[in-house]
Image (cartoon, rainbow, N blue to C red):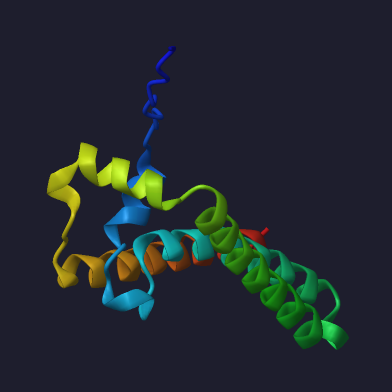
Length: 137
């Protein structure tokens, strides 16, 4: 009789995994985790910036254009997070991550609170500099 041995799946973890699991137990998802913040900053702010630039070219429809781009960016950011939750961050992957890095199971609430704030402030500063450089041209 041939015995089938169960092979353990090998996962490669990167910075996104670190950010995702950093905020895994933060207030039962009532606040933004570092991963959520970076996903939103990489989707909402660039698309909002494009909407701002497009609205500057068409001043009569500026509000409509800007808010349409901003709402579309919000939907895109949320859908990215939902798709990653469904297909990438599975319970098996989470167990393997915490088995490999047991010291990363709990972070202080202060770190979970301050990392998204720092990311948001830095991204707004970067896009403010970008907007000012485009306006001055």
